[in-house]
Length: 244
Image (tube, rainbow, N blue to C red; front, side, top):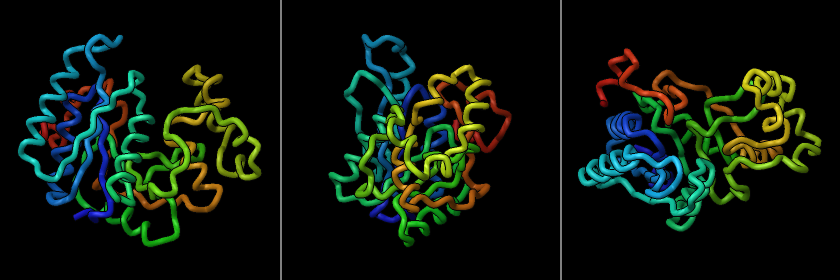
């Protein structure tokens, strides 16, 4: 069971099938642990809205009717940005006396508890955040990760790096050569040359103070990536399809 001082967080966005995998597999291995669901789906009248948002919302409503340990928040901002949704989760945790936030995404398969145990163990050390997936160019990815919400001063949204690029530890922590090679392949050089991606600014704030910890990944947590654009029913893997 995850500590009551820690709140797991999942953000619902264009994931009507993946949300079943993420929530059902989480609850299988963490039957008594609380989880906060942030509904960040588009609303009627907003560009890009389609009926799948309501399908996802209805499924979550039905799932929660049978689950006494889940909490629910719907984002009200028109810009359904993943980082802003994480910001709302941070504020919820602060307002409800929760110290540690543990986010993961719907397109994740949970097949055990060791991944969470390692993140929880990290909280016994002098850290502000920990995670188990290191990007090749430096940052620790927020899935899965754990954060001391009292130490978070920056938004999780994408944002300009600004003066952070002049910090004496910037090039120690960020491999810009590797990042720009990646950016060139995606034809996004302008964005990556000067922007923090989702959750990278609060990671950097922690890292420059040696408060960001990489923990060893475990095979009982698998992130499939790009959940808002992929269909889990097309994955030939019984571990995934059993939750659909």
